[in-house]
Image (cartoon, rainbow, N blue to C red; front, side, top):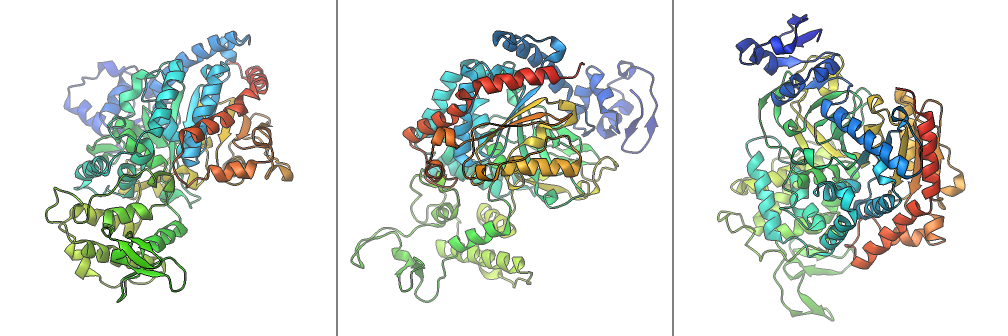
Length: 617
């Protein structure tokens, strides 16, 4: 080791082994607590045992080298890939094994099911065992989370696939269980600044898609030793505050071992992501995020954009003047809000039903209708929670929500919001609801403590060092595919297979990746798409360049698997719609799978070429 610094800026020039240092000594304990690494993290990683000790003590790692555990995984996986290539009649030496990354884009349930269908056919073609990394954005991470619940899932994919399909067709999680999960998240965070709409999204929305709460209570750290036969998983989000900045790195990755900024090279142990740090050391421990929350974090498609906020407020904001009416947006078509939901015929109420409560109103306002049709019936009016005996009335909650909506819209318009203390103060006894309302007013998603807070390191953009918290959101809000997780130079990727499940233009992701790489001077092939292919894409594109990875781009719906019905398929599987029936799941998996089976020979050829282009190690 050399050039080691502690946070007090004392320099240690060491020629001695770390084993000579007494781990129990106060000096060593302080070193482990305050240590930061300045440009020589790889040296720590190579020091057996010391790197692990650093991580366990909650130190931040600054450097571009791979995590030592990932390095070990990659070495083992490359040996397995070599054997898989031989089974495919591809002769290859150890140092010529290509590093292949498989990317799944965002796209909600369409991406989740599409990725499952693609992986199924890759496995049957013998190609899945050649993949080193599997990385996802948004909906694709939902598929990944389901797969990686099962140890060595790729060795029994047929069974795992059947279980996932069955789960998708099961009844939704009841409101009781979902709300219990939300309360659990709140209790863990009530004394911090970290409760956000991502907690609500996880408990009340993702559960209706995933149909599970208990299954996803485990963490990525729990899965570390259970996937020796599977590709290395990389879940991706972006730093919201860095999204529009040119002087900061928005790309953030989460693996079973580390979480951090992909291009900057700033990482923390995954189990410590969410704990409180100062000057590069952990000062307050908080629980690791579970897999349900991780899916919400990666799939928080509503977490940004002013338009999304205003759209949701428009849906929530039912004007309640003297008549208290609900409006179908047709002039003169109104009904008293208390009767909204009752049965009418010829303009007359013929059957009375209870007015919707605030919990149901929030669910109705969510722009995830792909999930909402599975939500079970809400609790009766006045029974938001049996444990909250001091909960305010529905009208008080409604008025408080409307006040906060007004505050939010006024802030968006750069106006000074007036005081709305009267009704907001009435709900302060219901602390959970208060936290939800304020999260909505501030539009807070994915808030975590900033593990880089107050560090002093020139390798880290200053924008990442100042704030105590950071907000992490759906990476699809920037680029809807996780290219930058696998474009880290140290991952040395030779071939990228991009499965694109995006809505709209099927080439937006690869174009934007190429443009961003050009600005950042990251090797990436030039992307040229024939103008006519945007509306009628083919099923297989290859982009190559000198000293760049080869990029294969596969649009989900194309002229090969859909014929002239591309728009019909896109409409059938729109991002925000009702849940998929068993038949729809089967059809979508079949369409996605055809993109693999129809191009098996093309894929094998590109693997061979990637092997030939691999640099000698």
